[in-house]
Image (tube, rainbow over all chains, first blue to last red; front, side, top):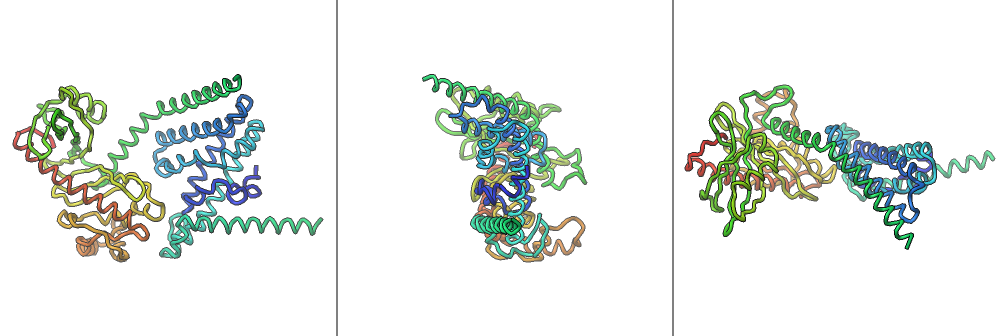
Length: 196
Length: 301
């Protein structure tokens, strides 16, 4: 389950779903909302695919995945709009984006289609949390540097580096985070070698 | 061949299953969603008039909707205003048909109650019964007139215009002299952190109290927002003395709109959009009022 959080973090290690990660992570709140949305869709889709995996013709598995994701996204979107208008007001635009997320399709293909429901469920939770963690980290860095705020609270007083809110800066931040993760990986490996 | 069939049937079945799930989710939630949207709109309108949870709207406050349609006649186009009229003790609707240059053309009684008029399909039904012949009609917009104590209190205009990316949906409140009472952004897809800041108090409240005369030539300036003005725009009730508020408001009343940093296009779009909405509305309502008084129609608004 914790595989998704660090060792296979969707954003920093697998480099999947970069487009939303770069586009949306301009503030911590955006990161949290999108992360929670992905978590729900990932869990529902993984369980569905895992339950019906024996009936899917292998040649048309990708369309089936897309269809499953689209169905769940639509259902979540409709339910949120109807019964949680306050949450929908904040999350509405993000939920619709999730249809095209690579991370979800990839997890369905790599894991849910080969494993029973319960491991798929935990894998989905792990991956969802990993994505949430990545988005919040990116959001925090970009919000502090770009807007000078954190979760909407003013820290600096003005906008120090406006550049960090623009999409291009998203790539820089993701790049640096990836480098950091790779470096950490290297350090751990060396430590292991020394012990061994 | 067998494979093709299996794949086709498999895909059809999955599509049907997905369609059924989505369809039933829609059917179950549609009513609640519509109710929410209507509620949100109602709350926004009252909010713009200064009513909220803390000080609820008095029962003397009445909101009347006027619906505008473009009617395709045989030879020419007409404007159709669906206006609320008094029928004895009740209020119903009548249709006023105007030529494009604002002359009276025809009027019809409509079998439509105030509640029924909220539903677009009910309005369409009522319209098609009175408009005979090949006349088609297209819905244009809605205006809400707020009345209290026998006077017009405000006009509420829902509208939308082009933003930086897609449409920006707004709700605008005007007093009877077309001065702006307030602006609320209902829906937008501008960039978060840049154009998205049009929803912030320090931007949208700049429109508040703009006089109609100034509005006709309103523009945006690319200058930083003065600190004292920002404080007034973001003010919470009671945290600033009335005289101070009045002084700063009066000072900036005739100033242009200060553009958002890094989002000149969004700022300009909102300013021009609001300007256009108010100008067009002021013209339309004058024409409508003239026709209504010349026809001696017992209108409710």
